[in-house]
Image (cartoon, rainbow, N blue to C red; front, side, top):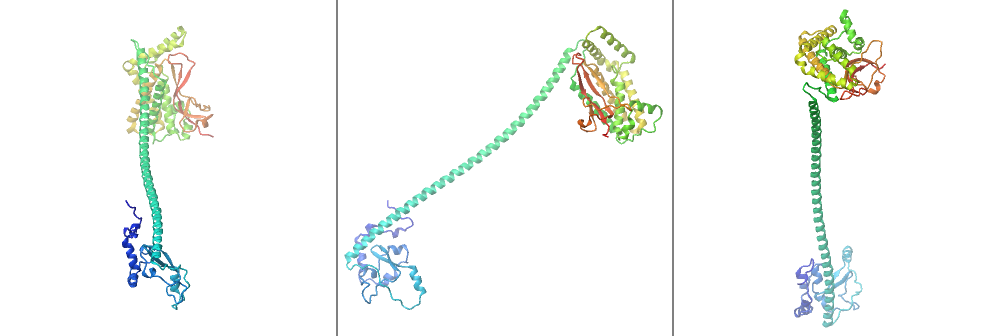
Length: 492
């Protein structure tokens, strides 16, 4: 298959066979004959510098012999700026130098004598002219073939480069798509990982809750299996006792805030028994009111009454005679038994029996204690605050509920084999009681480090201290189950 010329129309291609054909030779001879019309050649001359001019046959004037440049009067001398570009198809083509043309256009219209021509002498015979044309055609064909090969190689290289560029761009697109897919996969894996972590945390919380429930069930089973036919002591953990005491303290604070938040408290002007009773229950009442702590004063009054009438009782609900008999029995047993552990176990078991029957057998005595507590508290509080008779019934009901909770806590403490003591520091005038971070909790919101060696103004709720272990032995061990809530005096 013949090779096509890059960028060259098929009609401009000239093959060696066509150049050397008989018809081509006849056309050359006819072109060199004097019968050829110069006007025809002139009208068919191609545009200078075009490809058609490069392959066009020579004009008649170029094929005809011309005199030498040395002859006088010669009109065939080559003008300045004119040079031969080559011969294609047996025709010599001459072109004019653009610089010379432009310079001639800029000069004046007067004729300029032509210089001596340096063009070699034109052959005089037809054979020499044809040979020269054949040589020129062979040279042009070789040059054309070399140019064509160079252009073909350049086209091949350009095609290879284009193919490589297209392949590289395609690979780059594939890599980008793969990177996007990997990013999406990474985000999906990350979201899945977060979901797994969240699920794991929820499972861990659930496991902790189940373990806590299992611990409580084990304690319940352990306490239940200890019971005998007469009933056994209900043993609970220190955390349960501490949480119950904290709940009772919060209920007292809420009761005071609901009923006395807007009440006006006055300690001046009290006379007789009420003044003495207030001074006995809260000796530092004047100092507390001077600090603007009316809520703290009322909390201190109720807490002190709880200590005297509930927490200091051997077992709430027993009459004075019954309490004396049980105490004597415990003392007699202590004189016989050598270990305190056995005495504490006997006490816990005996009082557990009473606790089980207290709701029925001790109901009247318990109700009398509750009524006495409410009456005593109202006597003191009505003396220092304004009485709202419309809210009196609701206030008494809340106070009774509070006392019932304190009685249940007191009974739960005394049926334990370990010794639990409810402590409430007593503050007297002209006597300094310093803050103890181990057993006290400041309700003023100050830092405990800054409260060292600070004097206490009042105690708003008691605390619990445990002595001994769960079996009633090792009485040298002490542990603070709940800290007493106190209010420190302002720093001087």
